[in-house]
Image (cartoon, rainbow, N blue to C red):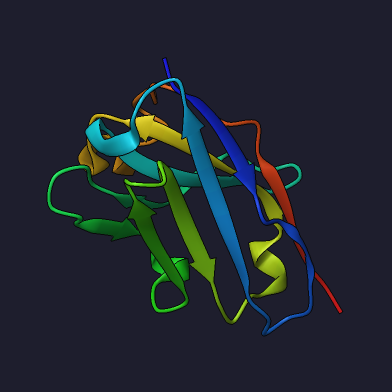
Amino acid sequence: QVQLVESGGGLVQPGGSLRLSCAASGSTLHYYAIGWFRQAPGKEREAVSCISSSDGSTYYRDSVKGRFTISRDNAKNTAYLQMNSLKPEDTAVYYCATSESCTVVATWPYADMDDWGKGTLVTVSS
């Protein structure tokens, strides 16, 4: 089992940037695909992005393409989500999770993730 801790959330103005981190302990992230999800108030949790364990291939939901960039540093056992050009509709609690593949992450909510962090709040507001 992997313990995941997200950090880097906060309050940012529209058009601003944040970088979220997902630090793992208990096991190495090297073997897992890492997904980022978000849940806005009153809405369902949605998959935002994923990076594979094998070739570093990535997945992004359409609404964040060109603005968000996912990456991972296996040596630091950490994954990241760089978020640029933030919009008020990006406001949500952001979670990271492990999975066997990004194909599985992209099928959320019809597939379970292995382990979840507790989330970090991102608020985009002027």
